[in-house]
Each structure stands twice: as structure tokens, then as C-alpha cells.
Image (tube, rainbow, N blue to C red):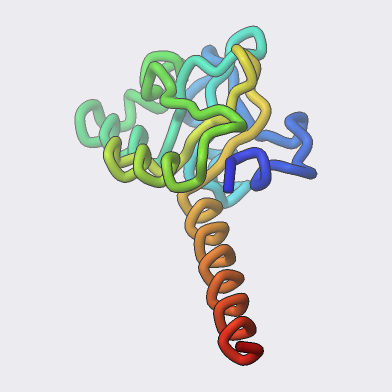
Length: 143
């Protein structure tokens, strides 16, 4: 299965993102209000980084609350690691595991067309395994 199947029916306009220049405090409020763990950071419609809960923790540990007034572009993780629509789910899972990340922007050329989490990928993989198991049970019963 490819990433394109996971983002089918999702409008890219529904992706919550932030600009480089908003204060960290505002981005944290957005994460909290939407109950999400990361936000793609964009400039002119292109993904330039990711801001996550981990970025908040690391910056608070290093700088204290002074980091809350800094622009997002100063504290985000950049460059963003991305996948495209044709990336297989297992390849994306392996990338996330290897790079120790939990969110991936999906890009089409330079434009972001989706944003997926490790939860999206694990759910897709479990659904696929259940479907395969059911097909195997059905085959065994009819053989």
C-alpha cells in the first residue's frame, strides 16, 4: 500500500500549518487547541520544517521560557523529512523508525499535499494485516 491511499479524500487545505515568523507561544497554543503533536512549517506554500512537541521540550530545557517569544523558524526542525504519494507505507514506517520521527509531510513536487503521523501508518498496516488474515481464513475454509 502506498501513502496516496492514506491521504485520499483529505483536502490539502485542511492541513494545519504555521508560518516561519509566528512566535513559538502561538504555535504551542495551536498544538494544544488542536490536540496534535506537530505542525508543518511553511513558506510560500512549501514545507521548510516541522515544529513538534519535542522542539518545545528541547528549547525549554536549553533556554527556558525565553524561547516562547522566538519565531518558529528559529526553533523548528529543518529541513523537513518528507515522503511523496508513491512512497510505500512500510518504507515510510522504516524512515520514521530510522530517523526517530513521528510525522511526515507528503509532498507532490515542492507542494505539500498531506501530513501523516506514525499512527496513520500503523493503522493502515494493521488494517492490511487483518484483511490478509481474513482472506487466508476464507481460502482455507473453501479449500
